[in-house]
Length: 161
Image (tube, rainbow, N blue to C red; front, side, top):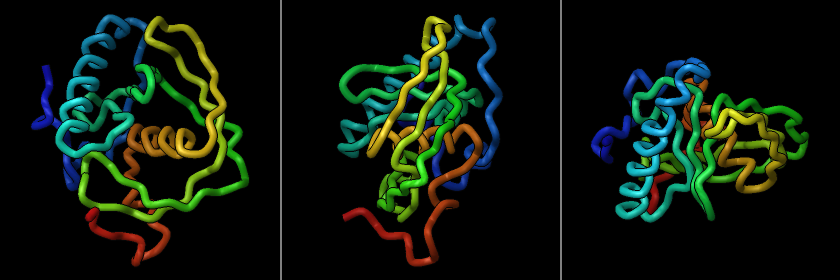
């Protein structure tokens, strides 16, 4: 079982890698990966008091997998974003991989995400506001993109108080 000490931190080269899709024959591994993601996110929440989702590459699992737990756990296998709204949000983003740094970014107000659930069933959700922003952040991780790379400008960084 992975722990908070397994969380990759800013500067780890694996955070900049593009993840491979989860293959159907790997579905048996997904349950263990999700258990690790859940355990680390809960440990992080207890220590830092934030964290709503985590992407598999943040634990060195280089697959297109996101775990979100706000009011209930949701597993996103091979998520794809589409129908990105023209309306843009501007916000201070944070990340478990650099918990004390906030980064000012722009994200789409509304998105549609297509994905497979943990039973390999296709799903499609329309998300808006903070959930839209959250899933864009996590899907960026799957493409090796950190919010530091999306900073609006060179003054878009600040320390969490």
